[in-house]
Every structure is written in C-alpha cells, then in structure tokens.
Length: 215
Image (tube, rainbow, N blue to C red; front, top):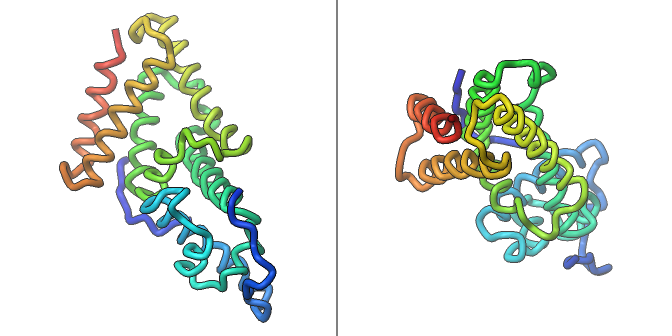
C-alpha cells in the first residue's frame, strides 16, 4: 500500500590545526552530532551541490564546531559517500526482499514501482540527493557497489522478462532507463509543484510504465 510521509531522516577540505573542536563534548552524545552533520549535508548537497558546499558550512548548519566534523568524516568526499552509501543501502533494502526472484514478473514490477514510490515520497530529500549524485566521479567503490546491486537486479529482471517474451526485445539497460526516466520525471514534477502525485496517479504511472516496456 502506498503511504507518503514527511522526510525526517537519517579531496578538498583538510582540517587546519587551528580550527576549534568540541573537545568537551561527552562521548555519549557524539552519535547525535554525526546524525546532525549528515542531515545538514543532505540538505546542503541538494541545494548547493557537492562543489558548492564547503565543510565549514556543513558544520555551521549542523550546529557543531568547524573541526568537530572531521572527527567523523576525514574529508568532504568521505562525507558525501557516507551519505550516499547509507541512503542507497536503505533504498535497496526497501526495494528487494528475500523472495524477490521467486515472484511472478508482473508482481515484481508492481512491487518495485510501489516500493520506489514509497521511498521517494517518504524521503524526498534523500531520493533527490541520490539522483543528483548518481554519476559523480567522487563516489567510492562502496557507493558504486550499492548502485550495482540495484542495477544488476534490474538487468536480471528485464533479461528474464525478455527471454519469456513478456517485454520488448530491447537491451535490459534500455528498458531500465525508460522506466527510471518516467518515474524520475513524475517525482520532479511533484517536487516542483507542477503535479500533485497522489497514490492514484502513482498507480496510473505504473500502468503506463508497464505498457511502455511490455510486448
């Protein structure tokens, strides 16, 4: 069932020796600061991009001393990758369960679309962030591995569907991009206020997407 909620979660900057840190911060509270840093980075990377977001600004937005951020992330690349890996792993976890490959093809397509919609509209900032940084050169191996987990499942799905003559005789990558482009366009239209994406429109979008790829 579709359910949309508000999003309330989850080599350039080397720290100078003179930058102050929160030396008196109790160890038990450091996890809270890490979370605040990640939340601030998510907002700033979305609004200003990676190159337009200096680390001191992230610290200011998170409400921590400028040097404190380097206790958790040694560089801006480490920070953006921690954020990307976290949210992409959440996306993969939400999309795929243990029985995924055993379900009928049409059911898998439906579940993937519904779960993707749930993720995107429950965590709109995170979904926008993943799309914005998807092709970035500063993603590390761990972040790229999360991307491949998603796309390898998609390729396997469309290869199987094509072999069974369920979907069009096109490369799996092409079919995946067609579906991804349709969904992303719907999401962007919603974010820009052009169309209110109700659950009914999301379901109608799925029917259009399926009609686009099926034989």
